[in-house]
Length: 459
Image 1 (cartoon, rainbow, N blue to C red):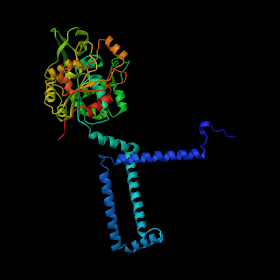
Image 2 (image 1 turned 90 degrees about the vertical axis):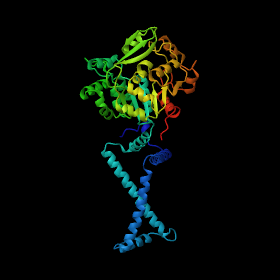
Image 3 (image 1 turned 180 degrees about the vertical axis):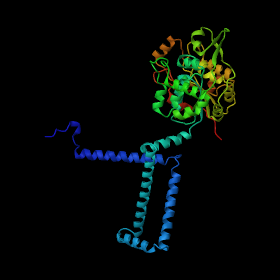
């Protein structure tokens, strides 16, 4: 005796089966409609070739008809026409409709054979046929995306890149590499290389491979010599050793990691960030700022050595940019250091693209204590020699407990209270926060740059 069916395995009643069939038919129709709409969307490069295929098919049919009617196959063509006519009732269906039906069936067969050929080719290249349409649509749209240069470092820059990644394939990140603490500092000291940490975060944010993005950020929690290092930092250190510096390895890195856009260090030469305080003190090393600044404010920062080279692709990206974005990130340790490379500063100063500063949400203890938003903008202008054309400012409210937690650590909100007329004139105020956090929302920030911030007109 067979086991009784489980409750969840009971066969559907006829009415339920009919409803399920109708729902499947509706979903199938919606999916087919979506596929057709996407394939025929502007920029897919399909409509022109489809029109050419149909035109060539029609011309070929007329040519074949002429050949058969005037050539040696006239007898066969006549027998075929008479055979089709015998299957048609002229009183119900005109004879020419039969010919149109046969032509339509032949055209459907041609399209079907082309579709099956494409599926076979896609499977042979390792591409899932069902995802090919979305992949092509995505790539076509990304190729027309905005050319945005983002300057900075830390989690702020990588968050921005993750927000821009779905919208454009032309993002170029220029990353500060003067960090001398943590895993980056240890590798930098051991191998005399630039700090790889912020580069790793940016590569992960722009990688088209979710697996590779996850691996890049994996931090070893054990192992003699590798504990505390991330896989991405070790990989960049390996490439730097193998190629004699990261400058030679940039192309390989972009290909291996499947980067959607470009990520470059501000310079490929190791440099030390130096802070000059208002009381005359000098602090060497980014990792020492928070502990050593004290009550004195940072007046200026510089790089040692000062005359560092920039990579040619970095300068090309700045020249061709539609937007140049500073931040979000720490003012003196993430944003300004990249602008201290002379060639980058000169290129940004004279670039035709608008310069956009994403205002920090909070002051940073030990670095920007007591500075207003206006002071942040003035510091950028003083170091770069160009004032931002636009300042993106958040106006979403933070929960009181979050504000209290940051205030206890010495950080305070930055806003437009007391701002000058010049700053108010260039400020774009939008809700840019992640819910419940003192951190920019990557999606909202990307949308603000693409829709609200000024862009260079392309001629």
